[in-house]
Length: 78
Image (cartoon, rainbow, N blue to C red; front, side, top):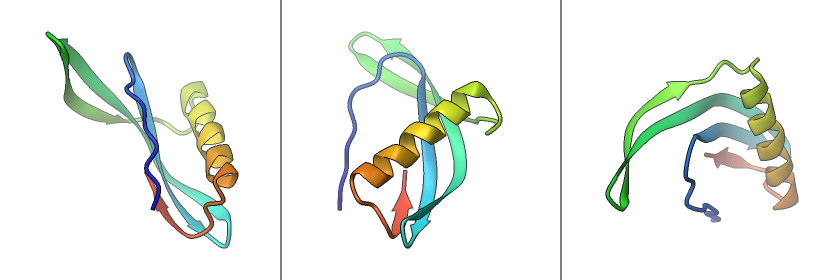
């Protein structure tokens, strides 16, 4: 099991994938909407992002490269 995440200030995207034999399939691209309250981030809602937008394509490209870089071949990633 691997979990890699850093604190993100600002717009936060995430990509859900499933992989089989090293081939990755994208299930969806999402954007977290959050607000700052004192020292805490509060997540307000999650929006589905159209996979054809520039933002989604950039996220997908990055995630697929990251999956390959860590040798992820089978299973779900978020």
